[in-house]
Image (cartoon, rainbow, N blue to C red; front, top):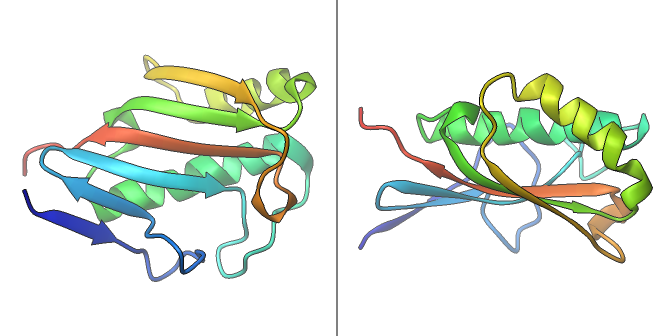
Length: 128
């Protein structure tokens, strides 16, 4: 199977991983933080703004793969404080305005760059 690595020129990333990998009919989006487009700095505004930014970045990454948020099959959410679940979920639902994909939300001790939330996902690659 041929695996294609995806990196979006207009999104920052750590050099240790690609934004996504495409294998067969699936897109595996790496853990994504609510960072500014051009810097490895977390956006201001708390977990809601971070969530909004994450889903914008995931949408951009999926678009590079000719897919959309609606093509997500499974999304994993990592929160450093479950007291932020409501705010994260509210911002998530604002972005996911369709039948939502399968999802899990787990609490973690810490995230890179001091982020409050991180998400990764698997999406189905639509046929062209």
